[in-house]
Image: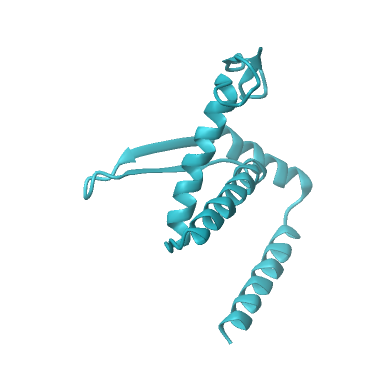
Length: 138
């Protein structure tokens, strides 16, 4: 029964999204995307209660979806590895481990360590560059 309820909730959410989008013109949606992009940010801080590190990001839906897609792939890998060893934790714990694995994989790729690709030097795009992703050369 709970599975059915979840499907109904998702269907209602999709219908609400479609109905909501019908009230906006293409120009309205693009202007909103531009505002979200201009206000993009990543923040992190230390939780005063337990000293744990916390963080969040705010960015366009398509940028966030790209990150979340990769995070989902890493989460699946972390879960499968834990399952094979008999470890059972929350999905959020697996996602936290997956985020760390993602960062380590990115660092490994950028520096060329343990990737077999040779040494790489990476630099951020200039302020005038539209793409903020690092450029790497061998």
